[in-house]
View 1 (cartoon, rainbow, N blue to C red):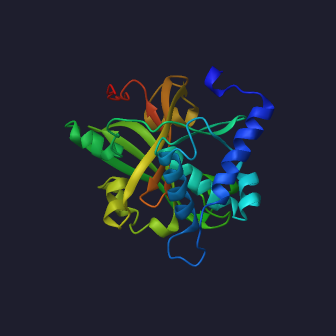
View 2 (cartoon, rainbow, N blue to C red):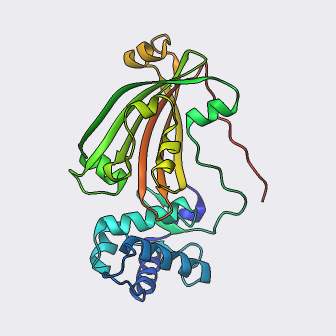
Length: 265
């Protein structure tokens, strides 16, 4: 564990309580047309920028903040998630949420695999394996920042490049941002369709991993059973800090790599 994340229990409590007092001074208007989570995120961002919530400050858990501020847990979650996507806070399981210094330098563009392939001169093609509207499970609801049971789109696609399968893309989206049909996904990227429907994409957080191919992976990607595959999970937010997509993707490692440009400060 990094030493910057280690502190004694009473120090954690003192820091979290100090942060809570700052948040209690915020002015939130439940009658405003601006969602409460957006109001909270903006005031947190301002407090961080002004140093009222300095680098290293710890926040209480979502449950504790919801109770102390008399706000719903989804409101707290969306606000914190928005800050995390902007690099203003870092969340660590078992430790909590800590304010960090904003990251300098250019941000990476939110693009779809369809667009990435076309940009590099490869011919993308898509087979939609499923396109289903259904009630959100508790896990998907938490990831999307919505209530359990709200309608979501679950779409599974097989993406190929130059007629070779390279990825199975599984995505969940709140029904409110879905203004396209199954057929549209065969010729256009998901993010292109979201933008066409009026969604302004702001940022995304993704985690890249690796494992061995399951029988289903092997069948879909034409890879040997047990072959290495890359995995990626992504949560994408719009300009208001709302989650508009959760994706879980599996890539054939023999035909696809992740390339990330790094910049010095």
